[in-house]
Length: 59
Image 1 (tube, one colour):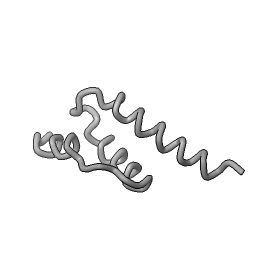
Image 2 (cartoon, rainbow, N blue to C red):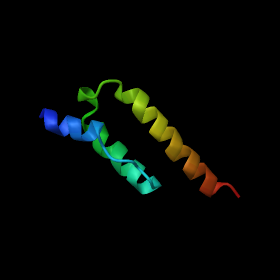
Image 3 (cartoon, rainbow, N blue to C red):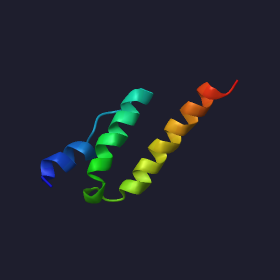
Image 4 (spheres, one colour):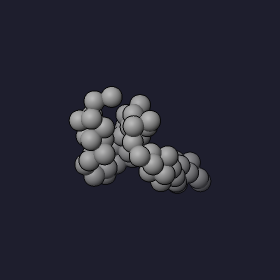
């Protein structure tokens, strides 16, 4: 793995929308072996996605 690719994921800009968060998680998952504590970072983002999905499906 090229270090500059891992660094670019680790220094990704602020995620503002649900679509941006989903995109980031998909891209970052490709490099999960190379990112220290990826599972802890991704867990927080996945919880955020789940909460957003539940908010829109509840009626």
